[in-house]
Image (cartoon, rainbow, N blue to C red; front, top):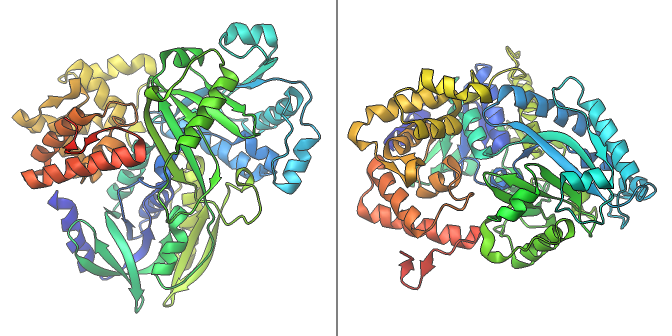
Length: 563
């Protein structure tokens, strides 16, 4: 636990950094990794936990954005498809092909409305028909050339309903294409972060930028309360939806951002899971919004909304949004009952979108741009926009901007660079052989958990866990252990119980967190981190409050956590 805070002393002893990155979401982390790879001295600070803000509220997909074609964002779609293909190759432990099906009711509807949508950036109440979707997917296939994913295919009514028998009979066609699934986005981000640290960068979570003076940025360690200053030749503001607030704090007020809220729910509904046949159902709801039903980790993810929101207010999935999700499920699978008792997790976040005035939220560009400014004579680069799929390209773009200011040349690219435990990751049919060769001394069930969680870094994790000896107490039926928590503290900056429940594992997302789980993981975390009883009780209470208030879990009574 103290190792990470000891890094703050090292930061204070440093004369200055080439670059300071503020914001530890996926885009800030991507810039951090690329800058470290180029040999620059780079410090990243994040006021909360890494990937705990906008990056934690994604739809868990890596996609080209076929619907962005309707906005005329061809450059973004092309780049997104290329980056999707790169992630499939560079992060095979985190990103897998995802079969996606669009159910369609009509043949020609929407052909005239589509250009109007593109021009006005407003929703035009005209359903998209098969001809329009066929055109869009044909363009999408063109952009996808060079990848290994199949081209799209269309089915008529009879074949479509044979393939998806629970589908509403009113659907006359289905269109199926491939994008990619990102089951555990937080773990992908942690891999990218770890790569940057291994290349010499320093990353600090729970450290907040609180001001600037005389060319130095004032920072606060939110764990210890310690205040300290750093200097940098370039400052990168990658705060996502909070970019304007960060710039205000630095003394350079801006009004770049205008994010929208997106919410999701996760259902434990075996009938709905079976109805998807293992594929994402991606479709147009009755209000013209494109939404999704997506099987993931044995659950069903349903989303998403797109509502104007203020980043200064906490984003929460509301009951009205839940009603909206139930309506959209009934729109596609009318004979499958769903109710609130099946919701195991809900989440919401603010998208880091630019100010959009009277443009409808669904038509706000998902592209990104970099705005140049300065803080007390120090160059400031503010990132506006960005999405998960394009994080590598965005990181490269911003890194090149920083290198230009530093008057240095790029010395390597991340285009074909394996990410974290994706290096040497086995194909599905070689998993057992790989485990036998590299994790032969580990219990078979635990070995599979470690490989899924860490990729090929599971070898390092297993070695450190084994070194813990008697402290490697397995908990939750093999889902975690005390030794593994110690590894997460040492190498993944896990400080709080919530860090583990929400981001180092998918326990909360999959509905495996209840009051007993919190106590079990908390007790193991106490042993791994050396907490006293007061700290343990505080962590348990804070976790229960947060999970109930922001993720819809029921964990408390009038007397505290429900046990």
